[in-house]
Image 1 (cartoon, rainbow, N blue to C red):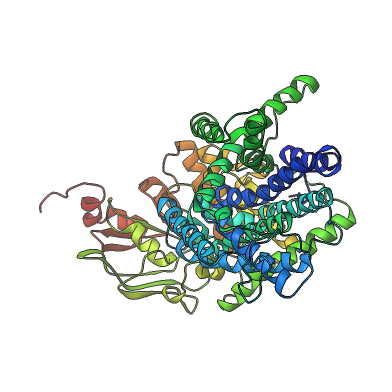
Image 2 (image 1 turned 135 degrees about the horizontal axis):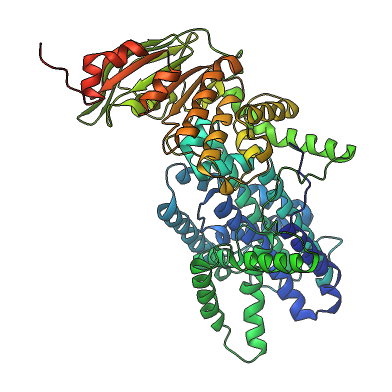
Length: 622
């Protein structure tokens, strides 16, 4: 796997060229009115980036961004008028303050998603609007609130950006840095963790991802973008008004982020241009600026129905086709990237890459240390002991005092539908709390390791009935995400990934996007994820589901080799009795949540109770 930390995608190139054009050309040719409009556009580009980032990376709708802009503007004005601090200091302070507000907004996100999360964040935006309308902004008056009616002329801009043209350039630089912060996170461990969380929080936790940490982290970054945008807006206008930060504006910029294309840098630029430049153009043409809302609505319908990647996605598609037609190239890269596209091959790039990776891994390592998790020796020689495990869902007993000691390298768990097989696997992996009993392995009580990602750190791996592969990550990135939270060097992690992909025969697909994999390739990637990071226990939940006979035979061969490969004990749930009899030395049979047989697989499958319960074969009466 090559390092592609500094690789520039076509969308990135388009965004950087646009920023360069705006930096060099626009300030020289625009009049005073349009300088202010373009500055406002650059500011809202940064705000939109924070909203689009949340939606694209985590699938979460945050409708508080304009309110956070108001907080950032309030802090900047207060520090400027009260302490006369340099603008750059006030800018940083505003960003850090809204990071904290973002963390607070993350609290409901730990339990809510979709519409409910959107409503909670919208109510928060409404709360900000009420506060701003009640207390107003500190526009230069005396006292803590500092409210007075003024012109804003006494506001201190950056020393290097006193004129409107210079301030536009300053704003473009700050906005570009904001984009780079987001993109850097996307390409490193946080981005991979966010992709897993968006795909499935359960799968992310089973990969050792601290979902609480990474959700909070994402809200903090979005808050940072809002705070910086608000501070820049205060610097542009010199004063602010509570009416600027209405909750409805947050809804608008989210809708425009979708219209512009949340997955692309260019999408944020398009969204902000529609928000600030389009109304100005309509006014100049003698039309009502409110017509822009009609255009926004039509654009949103267009995006939802025919353009899920927004206007930016269509632009990138068109440019890719034109480029292919002119040069004869095959297809376009679009907004994706492959693992072989790295450009950081020189010494300086490697040093910068490793330094940046180290900085961004600090919160992960601190969380890892706080949880008390540490890497263990490879493999598991001790048995897996399931002791009197009982699970009740209200009045329903899903597992009733299930007891088994798995000693063989590969063990099976079978039973009819609803027997409690997956429930037992969920108890072992931490997604279902047992009412009584415990699971022990290697001197550790697994059922005491909570939250579930701690079991991933300990060495527990599992797959799910549906292959949980993040579509927007490559094969290599999906596997690498499994070991991001472990205290291994970057080189060691990449070696682990390469070795695991070679084991399952996916080396030649390392740079293939998850969305482009067929079901068998996704299952092989799932297996590779389970093999990295010194696993102790690997659990497969119906790995052969939907597979052909030939594919099932390949899967069986891989499972048989796992113990020799990494020393882990393997538990397999499957309805394919031929697969179970081929790979499992011992098997536990469940029926209605109770153990009805356990022992050598051949003996278990010949048991009359098992044949009656699982195979549907009634033994003749004696």
